[in-house]
Image 1 (cartoon, rainbow, N blue to C red):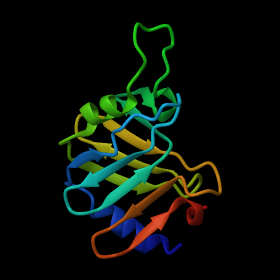
Image 2 (image 1 turned 45 degrees about the vertical axis):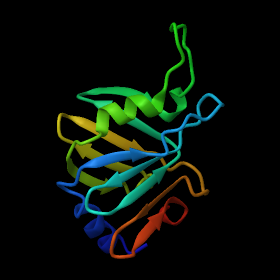
Image 3 (image 1 turned 90 degrees about the vertical axis):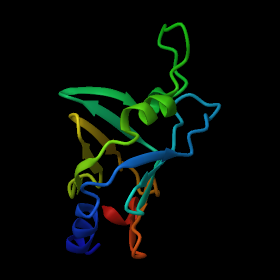
Length: 138
């Protein structure tokens, strides 16, 4: 992976806002693949992710449809949509050690995309036609 080019493409996301696509519920708990559409034309599909707010880990894709003793099951799509929609990206980076993607948003919100298999668990495509897949990132 030519990291310099990928880092440059990720940095172009700074200032972009996000909308969420694919927010339809999967019937199985812990399944919450999602697509983020960036206002500058990029798109990210992520199978495994987590939201971090301030200094506290929050909701993750693994929480989708889980009940955890709550009155209703968690709708991870709805929660991530409420947390990220319309917020500006302040930083986007690729973690060389893990192959994870980390997106910082205004309001001390982070969206972290996990890469922990050799399978394609995330894919990002940029408007100029370039992109990257998690299975090539490690």
